[in-house]
Structures are given as C-alpha cells and as structure tokens.
Length: 330
Length: 301
Image 1: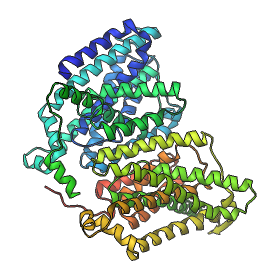
Image 2 (image 1 turned 180 degrees about the vertical axis):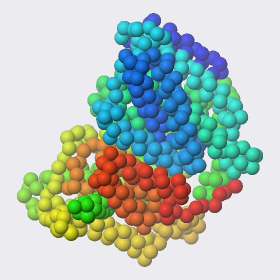
Image 3 (image 1 turned 90 degrees about the horizontal axis):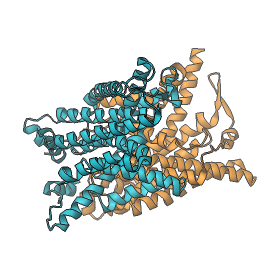
Image 4 (image 1 turned 180 degrees about the horizontal axis):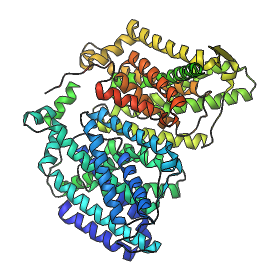
C-alpha cells in the first residue's frame, strides 16, 4: 500500500509541482537531495547501527563535484559530476567501511564520527587545495550538454534530484526485502546466530555501508552543485547527527520515512527561522524529543500504525520476546 | 632551540590534556554507570565556560578580589551540574533507560541541539574573554621557558586532584561503593536494596559538574564562543574511547596522550593539529577495539 500507491502518488505530485508552485522548487530540491543520505542511514538502522559520520560522504560527494567540475573546466557536466561523486564515495565507503564494520553500536557510531572529523579538519586546514573554511566554489555545470540559464538550471536539477530520489527509495525498498536486507534485520536481533547460519555479518554490513556512502555522496554532490559551494561544514559531525535525526523523525522502519523526515526537518528549519527568530535548533530538538518519547515509529511509521488500526488490523509491531529478555538482562 | 620547543609542546599538551581529562572523565563515568553516551556532554563544558566567564566579568566589575575567581569556578560548575544536569536526568533520561542505544544517543543529541541554541540566545555569538585568574597566578620558568603558572601548575594539579579524589570516592566511601556496585551488576545491586535511580542521578550530576568544571577552568585560557561544546564532545569521546569506555584512570593516560600528541602536532605539523586526537583514537581502536584499558566482554548468544 505504502510503496505501491502512496509512493508513486507522491512522486507524481512532486513531478507536477513546479507547474503549480514553482516557488517551492529550491526548497524541495534541497529536501530531495538531503533525503538521499537519510535513506542510507535508514538502511544501516535496519541492523541497529547508527552512523554519526555520514556527513563525510556527503562532503566527499560535494567536493568531488567541485574538483571534477573545475578540472573539466567551466563547471563540467552534471551527469559526469554525479557519476564521479558516486564513484569516489563508493571508494571512500569501501575504505572506511572495511574498518568500521568490525565495530557495533556506540563504537560504530563514534568511529564513523572520528573519520568524518578527520576529513572535516583536513578540508579546513588544507586551504590551498580546498579553500579552507570559506569552501570550494562550484561553477554551474552543463545539464545533458546544455548551457543553462539559472532558472532553467534549477528547474533541471529539481527533476534530476526527484528522479534520483525516487530511484533510491525504490532501490532501498527492494534492498530491504532482499536477502541482504533480511540479514541486516537478523544482525540487529542476534548477530551470533547470523554467523551460525553461515552469513558474514561484516560483509553484509559492508555492502550496505557502501550503498549508504554512495547515497550520501550523490546527495552531497546535488546539494553542492545546487548551492554552488562546498564547505567543510558539510563534513561536521552535527550534520551527520541531523541525518540520523531526520531518519528517526520520518520513521526508520520505512524507506519513505527519509522523504517525510527530510521534508519536515527542512520545513521546520525554514519556518522556525522565519517566524521564531534564532530558535530553529531549539524547535527541532524539542520535536526530536517528542518523536522519540511519544511516537518512536516516526512520522511514516505512526501514520502506518494509525492506518492499520483504522482498518481494524492490529499489526503493530510488538517488541520481540528476545528483545524484552535482553532488556531485562541489561 | 628544538629542546625548548619540546618543553613548550609538553607544557601545552599537559595543560590541554588536564582540561580534556576533566570533561572526558565525567563522560566515561556516566557511560560506565548508565551505559548512555551523552552527546550533550560537551554542551555542559560550554555552559560551564560561559557561566564562569560571565560571573568572572561581573565580579571584576564589582571590584571583588580576583582570588575569588577560584572558588567561583567550583560554584559555577556545581550550579550547572545540579540544575541543568539534575533536570536533564530527572525529567528526560529517567524515561529512556529502557530504550535502544540508538534512541538514547539521539535523545542526548536533541538536548545538545537545544543547549547550543539556548547558549546563543543567552550569551549571543560574541566571544567572551576572561583571563584575570591567568594573570593572577603569574608566570613560572620551566627549563628556560616562561609559561603561565595557571597552565603549568594549577590545571594539572586540579586534574590530578580530581583523579585521586574520584578514585578515593569510588573505593572508600559508601556512595562510591554503591556506584561501583551498580556499574558491575545493576540487577544484583538492585536486589540487595540499592536504589539504582538515585545512583544514576548522583552519577550524572557528578559527570556534568566535572564537564562544566572543565569549561570553567578553560575559560581563562581560551575565548569562550559558540561551537566550543561541539568540538569538545568529539574530543572527550576520543579520549574516553582510546582509554576504553568506563575507565577512569585510563582516561587520564589517554587525555595526556592526546594532549601531548596535539601540542606536538602544533609545533611540527600544524595542519595535523586538529586531526591528531582522532588519528590516535582510530589507531588505538584498530589495534585494541575495546580501548587501551578496556576489558573485552564475552558475547551473549
């Protein structure tokens, strides 16, 4: 229902939106692009692992787009920039992933954080290459070989982002229901048993980690070329925290949660900044606490629960006996 | 010449390590007892620094003796610890002890975001400078290097006192033994009548007080500005993880290592200054995943 009816409907609405409310284009492009890393976070959360460092791949994507664009001259071609960002973030994901998939929970979260802080510091310190804290300017690339005016370019990027997001959501949805996806869920409930079944938890996690890095890299490249700049802040740990935040906000149980969460997050940020002055972080923090304490399934998960109850089906997920037993042991 | 640079780097590193230790030991204590990694821990460091700087400036404005700054640091830290830390534990953390680690981490992240915002609302974005205590203690001469006594003597002495005091507290007092009991086995401790909730509260307040004491003591040596908490949290995590989470003496060694590593980098490879702590942490964790002093735990099937 969710993925077969609601998801195509949302994509269709989003595709028609620029014809009705073109003033929303810029906002929605950012929403789409920033939902990509969140999909990666949701995939990792299937195994109960949370990364506090995925901003590093986000930054890698953005800087790759900047460097390749500069190297090609005049900004380069968007498709090539995205492909380059994809390739480099896959490589980086493989490199970091080989180390971090050996760790779980807090250590997994914080080793990712350490790696991203290393990247952040390098981006900030090597001023002659990266432009330091002022960031790297990214010139406007061509789109499918076409030179574009600013308005057309933003219009084009809107659809590129939407298409990539739809593809990513669909792919991640399939991945979650694939053997790898089920192995991820099994890792969350009991990793040792997964090993006894002959599945390597590390390899499973590594595959998903690389996928999540690739998603974050493409998201970063999109934001970079859209905003025309990549700064070291892209790699700062608070941004990684925001990705995790958005995943929980939208609902970590469903891939669609990434879009719902990203939309709500950016919406709150923009409106709180406009109407409540400098309190958007406070608002978002309260919102996050509210979600975790009162609706831990997130926006999409809660809607699904409400929908199920409304249809008289009590399919709400109960904590497994194993999980309860482990809580008791703790 | 290069010897003098080494001395300078050592002094810098020790002073810095002492501050990081104060913050990291609070974090590791809280983690050891409550199994919660408090992302907001760095914010308490920042709150302590802001509280001390603004109180210090106010006191200087009233013409009080600069020596009063030293007791003021402790008061400021305790106030932050008991009010902010106490409220956070009582009204927030107590609700989430049964949650998954991921959600616990995010709850503290939410608190971090809120506290960062509150700091900006209360103190603005202008940096604060408060260096009276630094001047008050004068300078000392170490191997031909003139350095502030505050950093060469006072900070390490405080850190050492905290380390010894904490050890003594945990080993030889009833409250400390109770904390250790809950750390070792919460269920058994509860079964013999220990109130785990009260222990959690006490531990958390102590942890927060230590972090804000670190901030208060740091305020004369650095400008107090937004973002200092975000930076400190990753640093103190690096220390805690390098040592092995929950290891108090280990945190002292790791803080010293990271402090020295960082100050050496300042003089010999300035680009690597900020990277140094994370490099040390990554290297240590790659070789010993449970940290330098951590114990590996048996896997539960």
